Length: 360
Image (cartoon, rainbow, N blue to C red; front, side, top):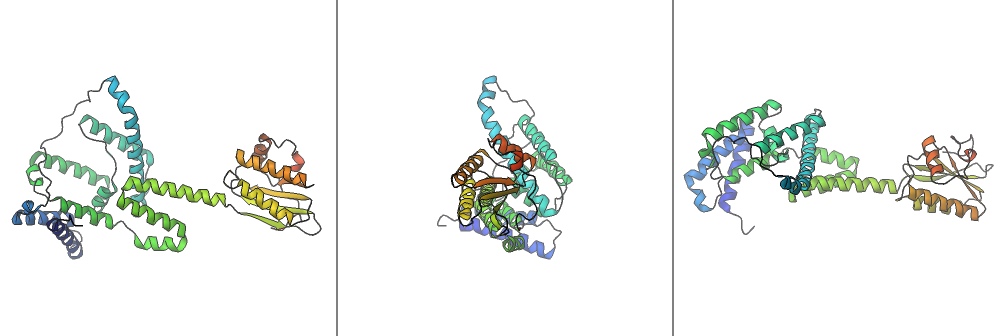
């Protein structure tokens, strides 16, 4: 804060104020353009560039020349890894931005067309001496803020940019960077949906926590960093939910000497040991000789879970008890047999619970 330029801050505040007032007085007017023009005039009149207000500065005029990059085979090999990494990042950023604005404005997107457009833009950038092209949440927000909602907006923006590069680059030199920053900040601020966050908080505390952490990461680090954090947190939340998957005993009728346990979701390395301990602990409290595990709602069993089930079966057998799976789908039955449960015959893997065996 000690290094803050008050003149620069003043230019940004002036630009933001003009934009906000324009929105209130005449919403259809191009508030962002008016704000930038007013700020540029104010900087020129007050000679604020000498006070430390940064300007856009010299912009090369004219259209770019088209040419194929002069790459040798060695260059391709050296750049391949970095190019693939940049392509993945650009694609992820583009799809995240496209989906966010599609949800916001109530329309559907075609991922294939988005990626085709991204690839075409990068080819065009390559032959014109440009840098990697990608979507930008900030620039998309600015376009939306000034009323650009269709592909025609991008086409017109490109045409106007060509005219500016040919005729008006000297005008751009005097534009203060603080004014452009104010335009971006106000545009991005409008896409923050506070009511949606409030509704999300009422529905799921976990999801709103992820949303807030992601928002903070975007502000501090950037869009891509926020996307990575959001994906990792979401995957972690899913893993935790699977790890504590629903499992419960169902008391059988006193006339039926069975203890039935229900499992829902995948049985895998994160929850297999916990499930086995749960069965052992509950079986100790029940005088039943046979332990039934209802796997009708189990979607997958990995190798670690199979090992845990084998150990569970052996432990129960050492205590003169038997383990039986019920409700197994053909896929789960096949998995169990592939994992070495050969001693579990077809009779031990029925497709349904027998009537009256357990209360659900």
